[in-house]
Length: 121
Image (tube, rainbow, N blue to C red; front, side, top):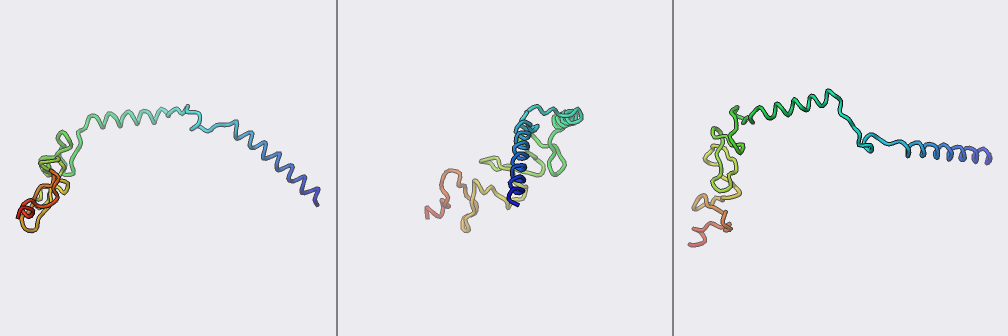
């Protein structure tokens, strides 16, 4: 029984060594760096580039966007940072403004996070 187990383990070691040698000699396509795209793939990529360069970006309202991805029909810009805002007058740029419950909207762009009117009172 012991001789049989030794023979099996020696055979397994030889097979493992052979498999190890085979796998270490072969490289995967990623390791080669010689991947060549198929003709179909490169043609599709070229068509995508042509389509992207020939069509202007479209806003969710369906109109072409202006330079800087602005839509003057359904969006307005923050006067300080140009962040895109909806046309809703209740929406304000939270980066640049805060709302005081007593004095309304005030700017925080110049470092003060407190309402200046409340601070001065």
